[in-house]
Amino acid sequence: MKYLLKVYPEPQKFIEAITEENPKDGASEKKTSFSSLIKKENLRMFLLEEQHYLCLYCQSTIDLKTSQAEHYLSQKNNPSLSLDYSNLYASCECNELKRTKASAETSEMRNDFCGNRKGHTELVWSPVKDSTAIATQNHPNPFFEVNTETGEIIGFGENEMLVNEFIRICNLNHKILKRARSEAYKAVTDSGLPLKEMIIRVASHPELAYNQFIQNGMLV
Image (cartoon, rainbow, N blue to C red; front, side):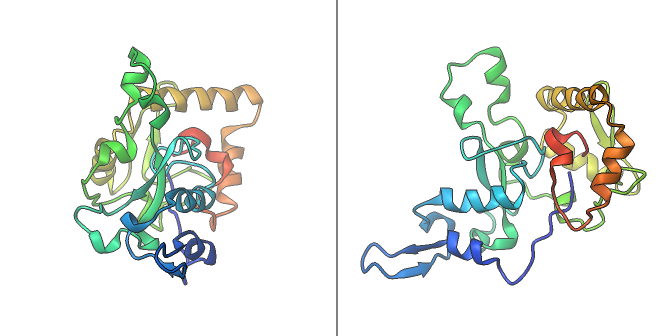
């Protein structure tokens, strides 16, 4: 997990994603509320591209079928921010699994982590909004420690309690996420690319909020 920089003024592509024709007169208008959007997939596509198709919270790979628009501050508690650029992200959503007959594997995945688990809870802290959550050459993130064998993550450093609360709220130690991290670490090891080299590559691009070196939450 990593800081995601939101640049201003609003990107033109974002404005285009929330601008639609008024059904009554055909005039183009910039929508002001999420519920008024007719084609929400246009907004989600923008958010996915901005985040390099990685979930805001667990950083699993997502696409239009497996993602949802995530309001960092909930719509319920903050209706005026429902279409505010700084409050919009993309997170994983198990729509495909919801249409699948329940099984032990699919049942454990539905609504059980990230945005679905967070619900209307307001986060006190998360790396997404913390500009110091940037990888360095010595550590992929100053707030997390990863057990590379089990895939479990825990809080680290001065903000340990806040980090652990963030992990708890989003259920980021769900067994599916832990398995993904341990398998990703194994894949890196098997590829012959040292973990330190991967961290250096991440750290060499501090201006990027996400990149493909942190697939599947390997480097939190």
